[in-house]
Image 1 (tube, rainbow, N blue to C red):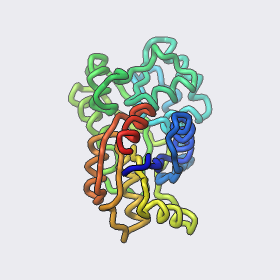
Image 2 (cartoon, one colour):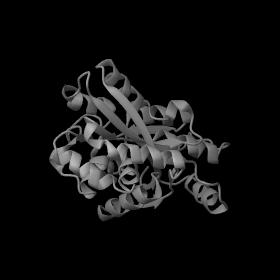
Image 3 (spheres, rainbow, N blue to C red):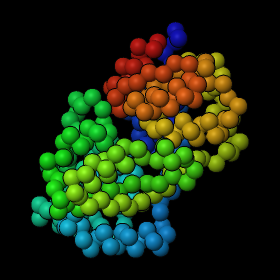
Image 4 (cartoon, one colour):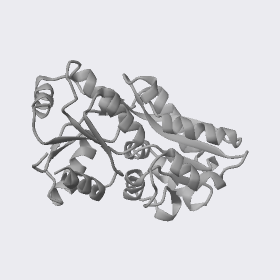
Length: 272
């Protein structure tokens, strides 16, 4: 690829627009094509679970947020923000974040940096495994941990959070009590004519790199374009599991980098 490629941003809309702003400031051409729609969970069962959690946040050793959307969805519930602030101030509860995006979302919501545990900025990966290496000493048989997550309407079970399930097993092996609460749903975007036309445009021979931060986005892309041959397409992924999914989907070139704007920029420049 001789010309510097355009980066197709496949994250949910709000995150994709944020990444577009940051990458374009670094001179990287981008196109926003969200492949995951985020829908807040507003059913009665979720509201009841959030109310129960609000009343006992100070009894949890930690709240693990799987993503920025988990942070926003949880803290949007009535009274949750104040209850979490009180639990953190009392020193009884910690917030866990598997990567820098979730950590920044917590800080943007007013959570002090010293109350958040996450992998070091120079960690090899930002995932549950790296987080566990940091937080394992906090856990004993009396610990309760609340995992705040999303759920998928249509993704295969293998794509619905293997990292958080791994973390749950580690916690349970230490004797901890693990509870989960879903505050949003991830789903495939509706196959509107506009979306399908935009996807088809970026599948044409051109300097394009698809940036994937989720295996689920790859599954949705295949669902939207089931007949597409991906052998001439290029994927940049932010985790080994996502790279495996891109290879399984048939992408001809698959590379991996850390999920940071500077790392993405450097990877794209090396593709030129």
